[in-house]
Length: 352
Image 1: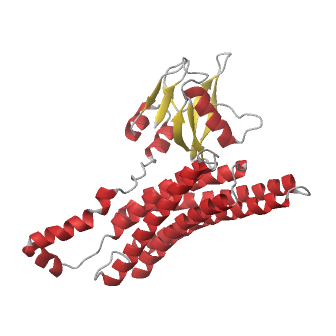
Image 2: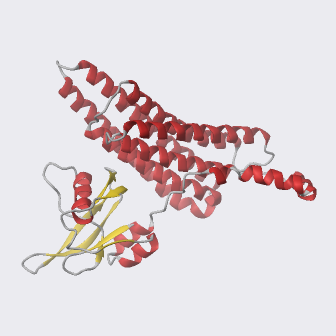
Image 3: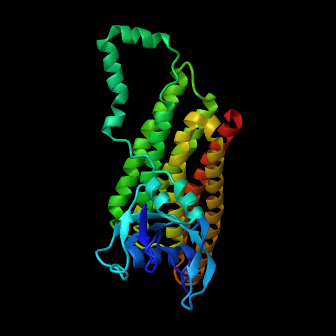
């Protein structure tokens, strides 16, 4: 996590500033991140939380100021920015960042973040093969494995799929920035194919595994809605490719920011299913946020459709039709993440 020093007290803080005319709050936050730290990224329109601190006025008086905090997925840091020589900038590990800031509520917000798992690579996908060959070399191990009730690799499969959701969401958000469109579409298509392989493995394991960690319908339901989410990302990318769209509305980019945040939350929630009893409260908090940002996405979707209709009225009906289709795909992606939240809540109710 990136922190900067304040100009006067030199304490560690996050980039922040006042509201800006003509900017939505999350857009103003993203602009402050650039002006103070040179950071460009994908902001989520829904605040993660808020904290209060004492702000020193120019006349020397102090006042309590409330700061809304928006998550921003880092893309790159510029070579130069307005306040480069006025502050120190440093990347911290999450626990170190929480310890570095002074405000108690900000410490709590930072401490609740989790790092999404890496996208599974060749090494992870080879693990089942290695185990199989090992059992061939050591017959006793194969015999012992045959006697043991098997719970399969469901947790590993869920976690690998959630990592692909993160990768696909980030590629979609960058696609909607309008840069290097073909590359980002290819990334989404590849990640969707990887996710399909995992989903097929899960469905095969459900049929052949003797002992499963959850009810079989719960396993298929969860992997099904996760796969639906990345399928919708793929359909969005294919629609953009089909209609050769190269520029995107601000509300579309806002919805992509929510999708990135929803994928991040999912990637944090899935590993907690390994121990639902002790993680029930955290899972409830994460699924609540998923449902909240889905409602915010609905509002952004409606505002975007209205703005698109007004801009296209009487002059460019085709633009409206194409734009409405892209908005519909984006809305379905967020809806699928709400379905993920509902599936996880069902598991918490049954097992916590």
